[in-house]
Image (cartoon, rainbow over all chains, first blue to last red; front, side, top):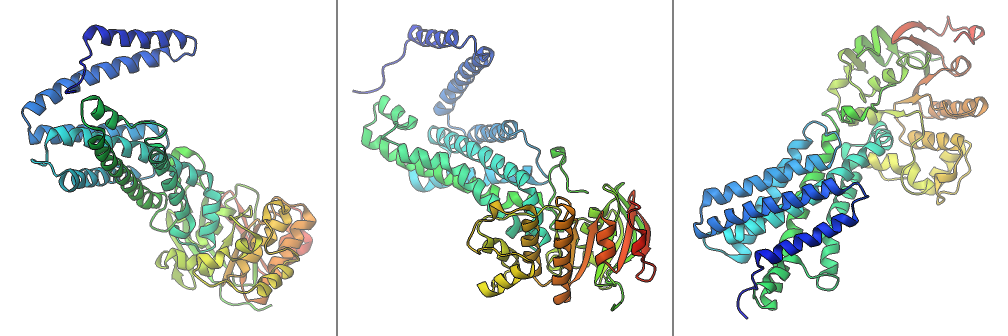
Length: 267
Length: 229
């Protein structure tokens, strides 16, 4: 059983019919436009990236590979700020971007060089899908962590100021909110590992089995990628929360809630 | 009453459009009251003293040294402040009492000391109970006990009684002033109550629209002038 059953174009159209059927059910929920845009974007983006990858796999090119990685990174960072509509204190954007870059580049590098050991290191067949998975999961993690951190500090500002008034350091007054944000942000990844193989078969493994790999090979990859995802998420979120909560304080250890919160600490 | 040089000296202070003080000395007496209607900048003034806020211009000196030259956390350990509403931290009454000491990295004392502190505040509470169901007056005194356990040089009280009825408010302030006096802690207290200022403070500073209206010295302070605000 070599290779995969090619989905003919006409059958692919049938899959769209299925989606349109669902759209019909959802017609009264007000989500129709959003679903249509999502369907369209998914199709166009995947077609484009499909041709791009096809080209890249035929002629591996280090610059083009890194460029695609960069585009994914920029898109992910942009998405974080779009998905969390909370004001950021000065410096937090830089912390988020730096955490994303260090966390994902570090774990992708480790993964490719040490775990998979591909030659050349930028082999697009590995670099791009694996990089995409690590970036995507880190993006979700950071969005969640950033939101929890911002809301935690905003909702507990009286408690934090109360601690500062008693002579607490910034760490003493607010580090617990960074810890809570870290925990919340890695929970989805932790839960995914808990349910993996029992509640669901992960996408990458399914894909490999569909394309003819033996399940044993597939789970090796899946275990490795899951550890890679966990490392990437934990590292990016750890960096973001550890350095991020300090952005809510200035050099004089004063709590500085971002301006558009509208709730400052004046009398 | 013992009068000594003022411990806080403010000079040419400007903070946004909230506060404008050309010169002010504070803390020469054991208890100083800062009076004024709401929105007159009382809280802002207090926060300038332990550098929870920094002025746009001008200097605040504590013990003849600019507060910006102190490490802010170090300064706040010597000049402890209590906000308008008592803050509850996670945990029991005991946890809430010792949280300040933990912030300072100091070892909490035994239960007998904690119970004694509570008694001084007129509180009889199980140390292990959760403080969630305490009344406003009890919470205010718990926060006060927490602050006094730190034995600060100065205690800044920001209207600790704003949410309390008059007799409870009076009692809380009395506990604060007596507790502070026992350990030589100076008190600078924001209040809108002329009666409380007259009863407990040796000096009063009056703010209006962010400016010092007058600083009343101990001699000139006349309790019979109450009720004009």
